[in-house]
Length: 266
Image (cartoon, rainbow, N blue to C red; front, side):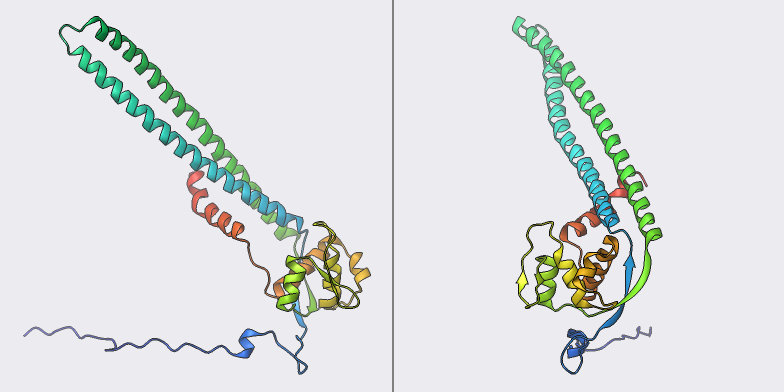
């Protein structure tokens, strides 16, 4: 008798136990008074304007990809319509030419149909040529933007210097007010709204409160080097677990990764 293969595995497999979250998993490390303990964190110091340039370049790549697809879809619609018209005209011409004694009216329709057929075929050729020109332009644009993207990333890497500070993270409320609303607290602890979208007063107040070492006053942070100020601000945001890519950035990155190689023929 042939030996049957051994069946392995559990008769009633159970779900793996889920681990209960602890207080330490949820909150930042706190001292005896319930205040966040200062932490030593790395600061990536570089010209933060490069981040904006990289994002704009990524958007440029995304636009090239989107236009590439849009033009192809538009041509497909036009080509389908013109091809249907060509088939219709060819059928009409064939049917009339099969007649032994076509009427004068049919002869007139035949001439008009042949003329229309030629015009339609020329339109299709013209649309096809214009499509190739546009696709080539978007392909070249994608290549240029990609090179710029790579060059900017290289510049950022070469420009970057790693330093350290000692800082405390923001609470959820503080993070929302500092990083989203750009608010800041005065000497009495009252939250103040920015004057306009360009008001960056909150940065100096944020750094004066959250950076423990080196300890600077609000006035001193006002005179800090711009790239240093922005780099440390971003570090506090990351330390507070508040930094996250926007939905637009995620969408752009996904599209760029999925379509760019196909666009440039890699």
